Each structure stands twice: as C-alpha cells, then as structure tokens.
Image 1 (tube, rainbow, N blue to C red):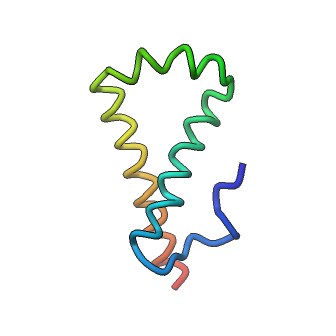
Image 2 (image 1 turned 45 degrees about the vertical axis):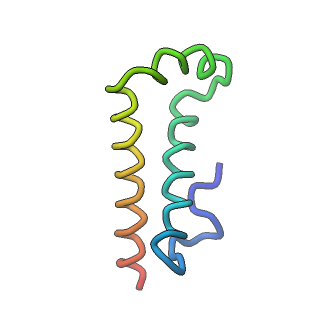
Length: 75
C-alpha cells in the first residue's frame, strides 16, 4: 500500500493535491478493514447512514489537511 506516491506529497496545484488526499483516505479505510468480503457486506449499512457519510468526509478532510501541511513543511 503506497500512501505517499513517488515519495512526495508536493503537487503542482491544489486540485492535483486532492487526488493523493482522497486516495490516502480510501486506503486508510481499506487498511482498517482489509477483508474485501466484510467491506462489501458492511457497505449497505454505512452507504445510507448520514453519520457514516459525514465521518468519511471528515476522514478525507483530515487527510487533505495532512497533505497541505506536508507541502508547506517541505517547501
């Protein structure tokens, strides 16, 4: 699982920076629930639950903030 593509989080633009942030958030979900069958079984429960969807959005926001902070740190 590659969480830092090409060894850097620095991107040419904020829009380009969203891709690794979203990918990292998605991979974190897989890392916490690595069983494909379990994720498939649980998906209907969280897919229509507003609290679950807000939690997912929060996870993406935290990962995006991490990428943004890392970019400033390394420049």
